[in-house]
Length: 313
Image (cartoon, rainbow, N blue to C red; front, side):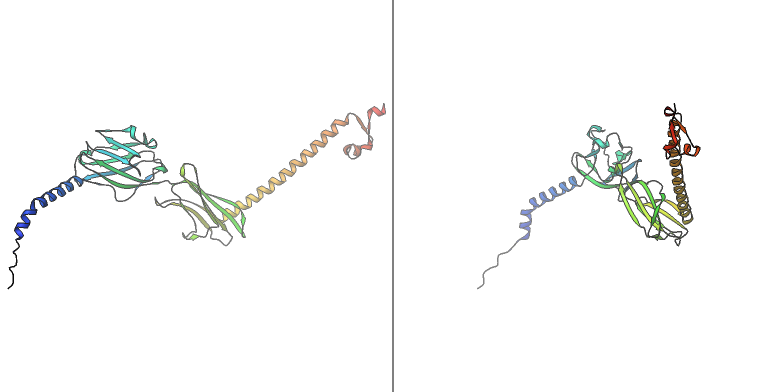
């Protein structure tokens, strides 16, 4: 005879566990509401700013709410690397890093809707990089990250002819004051990239860059070439062009100037020697009597023909 199977009442189990379950749900719900009271949103794409200009970094709260009584902090990689701090209803300028003092401004026109912007003046290469926009209320805090990309358009390229190389003429293009490192290329009339003989990028003061690119041109080269230096971040370029005829004319003029300079130096050397000899002749002329006029003109080589006056007396 089989024994009686004990009955199981789900209702009794649920009723006994309900108070604890409800308490757990309420705790989780309160925690969720506190920790996710708001979120901070910044720009999706990097903000690009030109050297010497200004940058505006914006962020806002979701859902929309006032941030007048919150702390709004902008910092770099570390919390205490303060770019700008707003707290207790006012800007805390004394908390800013030295390199940002006097260069930042918090735009608060729409702060009652949870939207603020940071304006940075006189942009420098060191401003390039990541920034954090941080909001903190009495019960929660959130942050958003964004990137500032600094860019500087350099000088117009300067092209110069610098002698001969590999059976052609070496032409060099230089341009300075770029940020970040630019891209330099030689191109022909159709825009086709030409092979360069050398290429170099050199750091300058203030973390800027100079570029130098050379090409060897022959008489068979295209009639005109251009040096193009581009800031890829700005998608802007500086360009200078020169024709083969100009290069050859410049080369001929340079050789002519060199020849004339050499002749001028030879002439000056000869004149100086003649002047020196004349001075030496004049110095002894008053003391000597020359027996032969030709010897007098060449007294230095014919000292036997020069008889001192003291010997004649």
